[in-house]
Length: 114
Length: 112
Image 1 (spheres, one colour):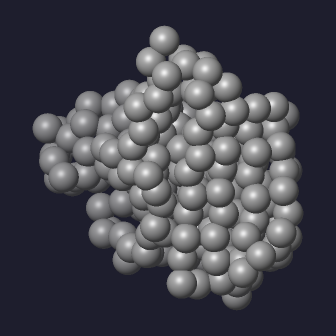
Image 2 (tube, rainbow over the protein chains, first blue to last red):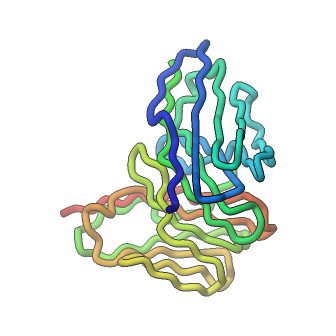
């Protein structure tokens, strides 16, 4: 099983709202990632968690706040977003961070900020 | 952010034709992944390559890890309408970091 699941599939929020995106994998992977993807562009890395600790923050604005409650779950908390944050948000996982990596992506959450 | 040079940008082909796309870089990579993405969905892993010179097939798809470690290609034989989508390559940087650099994507359309 190489499945990464994400909820919700679609999300519409106002600029003053607080919402969360959720990601789950049961492959025993110890590294999980958040990517942002704009239309017709490749995914851009936002955050990396390794063994439930934040390893990398690619200079993402603080209105995006990641959380890794356990090795299977990854959340992305959203607050005071801007319309330009509208995008497809992708979660991915890999066995770890060392050596050759195979990343598996979830289906994504399509976010629209009004 | 960083991106790989992926070509062609888009292709319109007839059903049954073979397709070839490639990614090149001035940097060395130690892993190449090829993904297919359909509208509104996440990228789906097609082929993973771990060694220079490696040639791997997955059904009608064949991909190779270039000998110089700076490039990779993906071939699709006898294309069918469901091959439509955007194909991305992704290269893992040599230093063993977490990071994959993604290609700019090849948009494939298949005419029945």
